[in-house]
Length: 111
Length: 351
Image (spheres, rainbow over the protein chains, first blue to last red):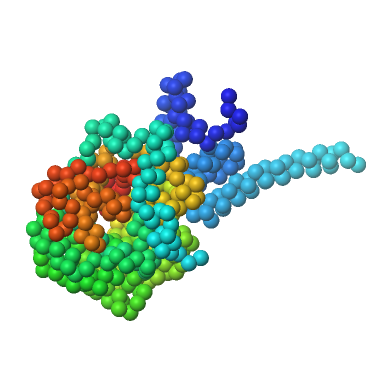
């Protein structure tokens, strides 16, 4: 058994999840690839969304993959960090907006 | 920090045998990754043989006014290897009889060869109609004596191919040196002003995109679209096509990969992206490369690794196209750079 939960080399083996269920694996990767095709959004815009989400869910594989993907697409570090601040703002906002709940509770209970 | 060539630094990598050792040892020696020969054997593409010869690519010297961090030539102001008029005369003899329709001049900065203009004029008289000059752009504005180069290009209907790793100053200057971005824009404007690169113009101006780091190029068409939009909206600059070229793990780029501890990951990325379709059209199958001193190579990369053509004829003075066309192309692990993804060549993707 490996000594750490994450190994960067495992990212390259992502496709292997299909080995234990070919049908669902194939469906997932078909869906995944379709999602990132040019549509109403460009693949470049989708790559930046993926990078922001990768940080929100704190997936090291995804961060690795979409930082590299962004560089390949010519996305600049300025664009990357702005995307991350969107992620940070939503995460921070999600905590703080619950403050309303706290305030309501305090107002109800406190004399 | 002042940029200097590996040669000037007396780096161990200035010795091409060291580069070839690195490319054959380690992950390729212990079997972690297949050697290029084994990989193309699996798809019955070994030995690699030339198809019809279309391009004669002549490297007229390694001298350059820039010292780019990824340069496979290890070019720079300190490089003194410059093609002589005598070697050019030998090239002209070949130009008169070759089947190749395109003369592709590269360097260094080819314009810095003192016989550059004379050579093009003579090649033009010898019947070459399709000229490519790989210009780094900044040379045009580096010194007064080069300011009329755009007019010279126009006079001979030369197809200009120029490097530009990004539409931002930071990324461009980081790869190509301080001030390169602004100087390149100035030169591009000069070229645009006389008709180069503008829509529907027959004066062809293409850009070459090399990734500015240890990653492979993205989709060529998507990058071209972004480059066009950004250069037009930001700087009112036009160009025709973008060629995306993968950085090959040799010379200064190899030095960078090793120093930044990216070498193994980069080689894995190249091998993983191996595409047998790209092998069919790699540029060594339609191009011959001539060095400043007249030796013949399968490509400019092999030239820099001093891997001469495997043919009884390996110098321009003894040129024999029939014999040369019978050769087996010399390969090593750097060739993975031309077969990754959509492939890579001096004309961009190949698959």
